[in-house]
Image (cartoon, rainbow, N blue to C red):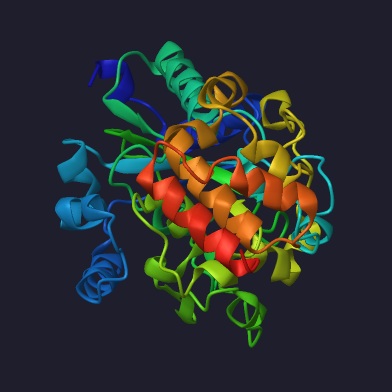
Amino acid sequence: MSDAVRDRDYASLARAIKSWGRELGFQAVGIAGTDLGLAEGRLTEWLAAGFHGEMDYMARHGSRRARPAELHPGTLSVISARMNYRPSAADAWSVIGAPDKAYIARYATGRDYHKVLRRRLEQLAQRIETEIGAFGHRVFTDSAPVMEVELAARSGLGWRGKHTLLLARDAGSYFFLGEIYTDLPLPVDASASDHCGSCSKCLELCPTGAIVAPYKLDARRCISYLTIELKGAIPPELRPLIGNRVYGCDDCQLACPWNRHAQVSEEPDFAVRHGLDDALLAELFSWDESRFHERMSGSAIHRIGFERWSRNLAVGLGNATGGEAVIKALRSRADDVSSLVREHVAWALQRHGI
């Protein structure tokens, strides 16, 4: 750490960092400390219950998630930033209620948020460096064992809702989070208070009952896990409950009253691409692998690959109406090269009595 950094008025620097963050397109920036002891205990219990499913990396990193200074040595404070992503898109409930259409979680209908946030956080770090000189830091955007919701809550950006996502009174939950771990002893912000009250709409409306208790999620039942993280076959008993949700799920957010305050993002990168907010299942299922890579390049969806994308669409088609276009689409891939896809297509056809 340079002499200029040591002699700095950290309260003034913290205020400047928040201002620079807003200039870079973040809606809010806060600062948290590194003591996450209480959160570590909750994480240990969650892992012991097996709620992480096949996400072995959650258990593999274990306590490092709750110990920022172990993940990045020298960390004294964490800058947490929030960026809205809600796109201008077709009405979500209307698409979910149209069984022949594909519902894609709204965060994934545009470009991959990882790249967008990382670039902006790196620009923020560079702005700090321009002001004070070199300092120790590392940028994270859902790319390492970071307890981003816990850190964001401790930095005053919102509170952890009963669905386990971060909630903010002025923005709901349609936003991404990113962090800069630093060796700067910045003053920390006060945590936000919980404003979920007696509301339990997210628990009641979860299609698969994945929110097993307030603030507790069994990822093994979560549609986001099933359609994104799970690599193999989706459990047959959960397939009918997935409906037409082919990549992620927004139901708990759609149910949350605080999301009436969610603002449409002004970020061009988060705008809907290729009509993914209102596409037909059969149309998407007709893509070959080349078309998938062409259309999904630069999208968060691209990382699950063509096979899992096809698996998800097959489940959606199995839950669709039995119209000619649906049956034709399924039959066209009954002999797919992927055994995983073939299994889900066979299930879907059986659902339609074929």
